[in-house]
Length: 525
Image 1 (cartoon, rainbow, N blue to C red):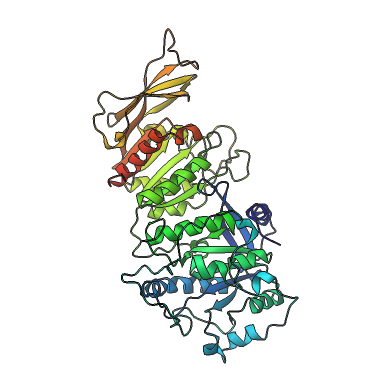
Image 2: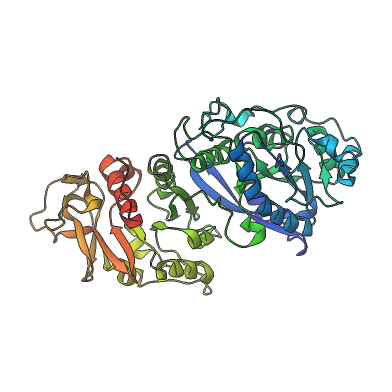
């Protein structure tokens, strides 16, 4: 059985509704996948409710030393976090399997090695777990996002290849109740003997061993296991001088995107450890968090495509937090992953009439209260003023438009609009590369009572659906401006209604300019 992404989505919904597990061993894992086109695939996050006793954590090739000095240093930095994650998993009944390939002789007398070697033979192991697994059917037609033909060493000069590893790095504890193996067949025997149907993969390297080993992501998915990658507990072998010529860490992110689209979902270590996900010290990219929570304008797809481009060309780390697009869904008023705001440098928001759990709303308020910048689009002027019946224990922010965006949302005019640069806007950096006027088919928002701190950049003039100006047109409206909130830089535009807006070069240029204006960095040329 091949675990395609669509099959995973169905099983994820079922898992989320499964019977509660014993509290001492329950795992609630927010798992992220991507659905749709490779670059513009929308993010889907659902909670997996797994029993720890039915789960294995496989730690792949966290060797003591690697032929690449950069890889050795990153493994050493990553290892304490992997160890902490393994300790937390072990405490919940998870079987921890250490898989430092090519080093089994070093563990011949270790009880964890004997446990793996002596596991009773199960039914014949699936073919995918008998040898290296280069691909699975769900990858048919997919294009690998990075070039790894040169071995992936990022050092200058490149390190000479070899096999210097002698065992797993000592910073990761091997408990007597664990298992040690580099054999897919032995992993299969261990899983079958323990009634284990779920697996978490951590370790290196994402684009090589983690994906392709006989105990790796592809092999387990093809064998019908429920499998996820711990996306912050991994690293690629990628040379940033190779295609697509992005930073080493962006290269890892692109591989993770690919895995989420074609192989299996991912989680991060905060699911068990509770704090912020792991980040390498050398990963100094500004972190842009996109929050999508609306059901009319296709922001789920538009944000994914835009964020992907921003990571490729702008040198930023991007994270997409995606709420349900169906307001009737049980979790419609919930945005998974809001802890990402704790380390965010910029937030891009496209939300419409949602309420949130108080802790999630407080995270947003806390982010803005720290003077961090916000880019807000279209319906974000009424982002947290929910209509209809919502649970009373949820938090709203009906004055978000007045308090944060510096305006009062007063509805909209039907028809279309002509968008022009405001006469007093000058050479504002957000307008770099824009000329106008632009004809937009979206309705014109009425944004009144602008705060004195607002600087209007674009104005919209109402026209009919046929493009003609009415005999008595309503007043022109500001449609893009900057303001501040508690020291935070804020940009808001009432434009952006749908995929058509994001397909327009001028709109994408304006939005990218706004992000780099907020980050106080020059935009890429």
